[in-house]
Length: 289
Image (cartoon, one colour):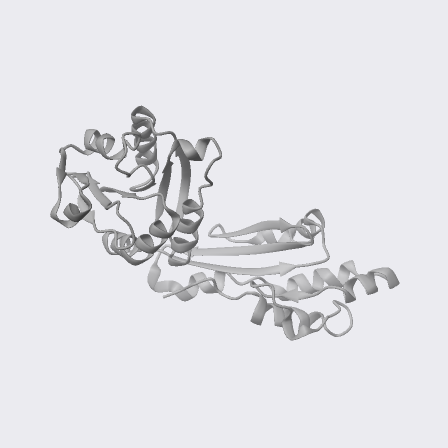
């Protein structure tokens, strides 16, 4: 299931505030097989907001907006949503204590950690949830209320698995060359991503299955053929320099912890051992539930 995110606020466009909500939402939904299709940042402008929402609904059935829900005149998200979904601004009993109006066409989700209410809109089988822009409010309410409601509204029909491990000692281009044949042989429902940082490369393997009941199938598809990588490493290791280079290779799990606190060579009888450890510890599932 895919969602679109729209972050609303002039402060985001001028760099006064950084949008952290979109990243949080993506991290929260991904382990459950959901993903973010797109992220848009728009100004506090009615036409811009409406245009962004219409574009987002062309892409996905779920749109999440953050920001623009305050009581001041520059927060125009609520009247704009009234124009799109119908209704009028009214006082709702759920938020009456906060003296805030909400569109009559929405389902109010009481904000337990702030003043601005969350609003659930539904039309033609599509859902828009409007959330506040304050990060700790967004995170608390999205994780405890919004996402559980979305999962109930849109039951997951597919299975998704991630396996992540970290490689140190190879450049991205060299590693890509080593894994070229492996990537070409991967089935269409498996994707390998390279996420380089200074000093390391994080490899993320994603496997999907269209039937959630075959969760184990996605899990198996997400395993890296570590013996093949070990063989490729051995073929790369020639001469004393590469021996010393291989001896410096260290395996880390997805959280960056060195396995057993040891170093393993790709040549000295540790090729299989090294990669078995990688398979066991370095490819931990990023999954919950």
